[in-house]
Length: 241
Image (cartoon, rainbow, N blue to C red; front, side, top):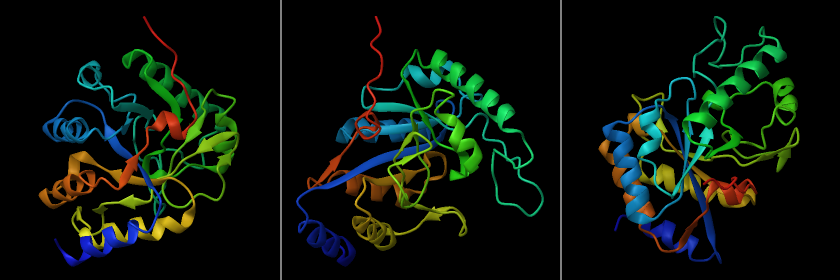
């Protein structure tokens, strides 16, 4: 066992319970990498919150999802609409709020139909960016939860339950490589002070082998409890059938 993993297990053993949750972004259609992700969820019985791009999703995506998988709404089409020199966002400053809500509502209806009603009314904005004026209108549009990245300032925002992610295992500025065991584990330990559910963020389409190996090792730890999205967002999906 490496020094980083030894130090990590020693530190988390001091806590009564380490509770994490797992969100994976950018799902749209079946692929080998998504199959591998779903296989890890099944093998280790880890609940997975899959953020699906509604307007890019295919019906085949939902046929292979097991009972451990929750579906969240990942924006509408995941298209960057930012102006020159601005950070990537699907929700640019120049687009009226009413138009944004209309786009989101139409995408939510499509996702609900494709997923046969299993999608939760939880928004995961692409690039984890969302305008504050839009956030205030989401509850009236039917959303119940919001998930971005980083420590939250409040458990509720704009009438929504907010549950964020904190450990992004991809280094987007260094060739989309895995950030490394030591850095990933440090992010988990740093998040212990936040007093909120700690979120693991993955992007199955860009994982290298080191990232997959890290996930297997993390999921194999018996000292971690993994929470379902329904539990964290205090939401019970309607029954069907």
